Length: 512
Ligand code: SAM
Image (cartoon, rainbow, N blue to C red; front, top):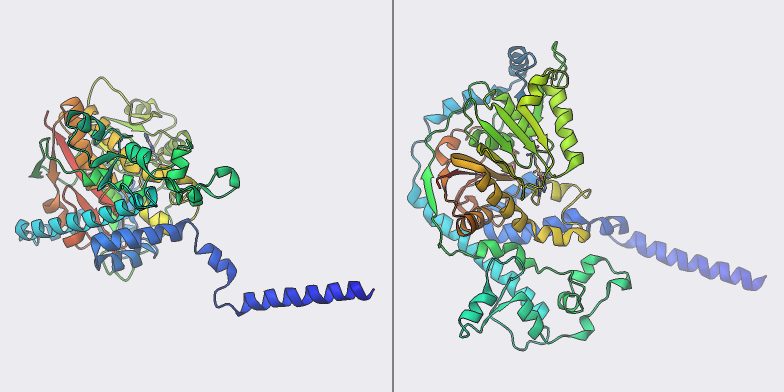
């Protein structure tokens, strides 16, 4: 009996000590566990990457990203549009088209000279960041510090063709492909970790060369993600010209609250007399992608990554395209397009009218084919969805089991944009957009796609600079300037006063 009492007593003391230690600690254990979750990983990654590239501008973007975002009201032309606009105007909202026409006259003093300087700065910051990552990758591959190459190149996406170059010119001995580098690496066996040991794949990624060399083929270096951006050859026509054909579509009705407005919340959407909802709430930055399409009456348009359908709905609300093909590789997500269209487009289910004009397809956008050619293609690609990544753990691209998928995002985006450039007719336009601040997924992908579309398919497209038309949005949202100004597109940066985005929009017109 005494023995049992002693065991209980000891157990009580132990439990007490553990509990005491737990409660004594300033940070609760549950909080500690949570802080290593995907959204914290995303935030740490962005602090490192965006902090290096955008400098002090990142602080305010970061703060806004972590706060509740703003949205605008896309008025439904198939509901009671005038009534809805009056109703929202009484609650302090303004018509975006009117705000833009008021602002238009104030933005004629744009100075390209100054911007060129800051663009170069962004390149320099990003180059430094990429070389830091490369050094870290090299240190992982060469833990013993022998035979270290100056630079790793990546052969598996066939971008850099380093192996080929080396065969043609044996003098180039310091440039290694990743596979060559791994072949020659001195392996530190103490770092070999087998997945059967039950570690998370996150831990495995920290023991990189071993997993690759042991044939587990489950490793991609972090710097791979940036390899598109770091390649800056100009062996293709890189044309940038001002956009002169921009017009706000006559029938597109968007209501928004101005920057710093006291109000920023819309009431719930309501069913109209016609049975459809009166407005669709969406991020104001999404409207810019549709504006950049510069749609014209009677056009045949394609939305290559359309689900859940917000931008496709806005494109239809312009009442301009004759045909809109809404494609998405995900079946479940593309079912949401159908639901949204049934809720917003009158007689969408019953009449044949819509079925002739709006086609929903479920094909991988990288291999989507068409024999007629489109007038306009929107490529709103899957990306790191920065706002979602720092605020939600669910379906987060920074989850350890999605590392490979995340690091390969720029390659996927480039393939989608390349295919869009092939699908558009000569004279037609492609709009590329992301909801990320990453220059690697934005400018980097535009450049890589232009280069590869030219090299592999002789397609030439010019970049249309939307700076001037979009400057009229300055009372509504914040566009990246200085270090946050991209070279080939426009960047909507989150801001506490105008918490939209992030979104990157680049307009390309095919000329060959
Ligand atoms: N444009 C949409 C909107 O405004 O509602 C949002 C598009 S979302 C940013 C990206 C979409 O790309 C996702 O719905 C995803 O299913 C789709 N996607 C991912 N990979 C794809 C691929 N290879 N081909 C086509 N769509 C793809």
